Length: 407
Image 1 (cartoon, helix red, strand yellow):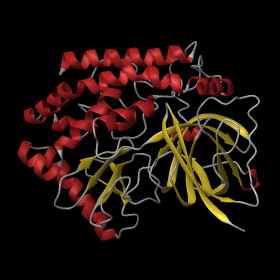
Image 2: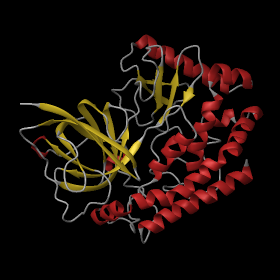
Image 3: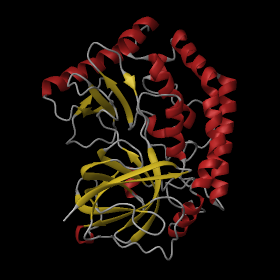
Image 4: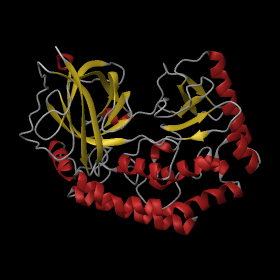
C-alpha cells in the first residue's frame, strides 16, 4: 500500500490556498456534502462530522471529529482528525455559534503556517459578516506585531449547512503566532472579566481580572509576581506620569498606538477592559499590547451605535494615560500619519463583500436574520446584505470625520 503526499495550490481573489494531506492510492474516503439547497459560492467548504453526530454543548467538552475540505465538485483534502468544542462567551449562546478546532497533527490551512489550533468564528451578530475580517486587515496593514489571519469558508456540520464562517488562527504563543521565543520568563496576559475560575487568574488593585495565557502552567509565586507588577503599574498611573519612564519601563507606546487606534476606531465594546484585551510582558521590560480580537459587536453594532465620541480614551487605564500631553500627542500623530489605512479599509469593504456575496446569500437563507431586531445581538435590521455593508462603510466614514475633528 503506497502513501504519497499531495500539495494542492489554488489561487482565488480570497488569496493563496495551500492544502497538504496524505492520500492512499488504493482507497478514497469522503465525508458526505449535499449542496443541493446551498450551492457552491466560490469559497472553500468545510465538512465536519463528530463522533456519533454529537452536538456541541459548551466550550469545555472536546468532541472527536473528522474534517474534510471541499472545492466546487470534490474534496480538496483527505479526511483530517481533530476535536471540536464551542468557543466564545456571548457568541456561544447564539443560534449560529463559533467553534474551536484542535487537529491531531499540525495542519497548514489555506497558506497559513501549520498549527493544531484553529477557530471558526460565526459572526452571527454581525450582519455584514466582515467586521472581524476588516479589523484584522487594518491591524495587519498597521504592522501590529501579530494579528490572526483568516479565510472565509462555508461550514457543513454533521451534514447540516451552518453558513459562512471565518476560519482563523487562534491567539497562542508559538513561533508563527505570538512569538515570545518560548521563554517562560515571558507572559501573555488577557484582561478577562468573563474568566473561568479554573483559569490562571490574578486581580489588580483596581479590581480588573487578568488571565495568564502563557505560560500555560505557573506556580502561585509567579502569579503573585504578575499581580505585584500590575498593582505597581496601576499605582504609577494614578500619579504624575513621566512620558519617558512610561515608554521605557511600563508600556511600549509605539505598539500601543497601533493597538489603540484599531480598537478606538471600531469602538470595540469588548476592548473596554472586559475581555479579549491582550498584552505580553517580560519582567524588566515594557508591556506590548495586542493581538486584536473580537469585533463582531463593534462599529456601532451593539449599544454604542453612534460613530461620534471617544469610547476607549477615558476608560480604565486610558483615562490616566491620556492626561499626559506627550502621550496624547504621540497617539494623535500616529492617526494623522496612518489615517489612510483606515480610509483604505472603507474602500476595501465592497471588494471583500463581492468575494463572499454568494456565500452571504446562502448564509442568510439558512439564517434569515437580516431584518431582525428582536434579540439582544441584533440592534439594527436591514433589507439586504448590501444595505448592511453600506451602513458599515458609512459608519466608518463618519467615524473618520469625527476623529479628524476631535484629535
